[in-house]
Length: 185
Image (cartoon, rainbow, N blue to C red; front, top):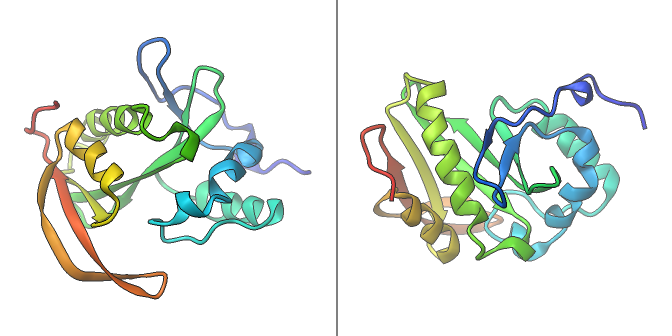
């Protein structure tokens, strides 16, 4: 397999937590096999906008076309530097950004997503001082993700009824926000 230009990108840790925790770094094409662990899992993809990945070639194409070109996406890694998921920041407008994350099912309920959201939330207001509000839209049935945001200190603002069409179904979404002045929990 040929390496993409981004493949040579340094694996510098963007953020890290205490020993035994996680680190965040840019994803690379060499992460494809780890990516396949969560990207092929229908339960992981249940609340995501994408369908489960069905082949390594499809995963390579997704990483090349969507991950490597994304303006702010980081692999969530354990101490061995292998990704167990990713976290991303998406623009909403000039002062608002949206946070999203996905984690391999085997790591659910262990605090890794909470730790990643806390790290990114703390960092993003320093990295992007123009941001006045970090948002998260979570499916009403995705209770685990709602708990992650609440543990970090995001404010649950309310349910956006019939807000989005996800995989052919009109869904209610819960809006969460975090402002630079909000305290972490």
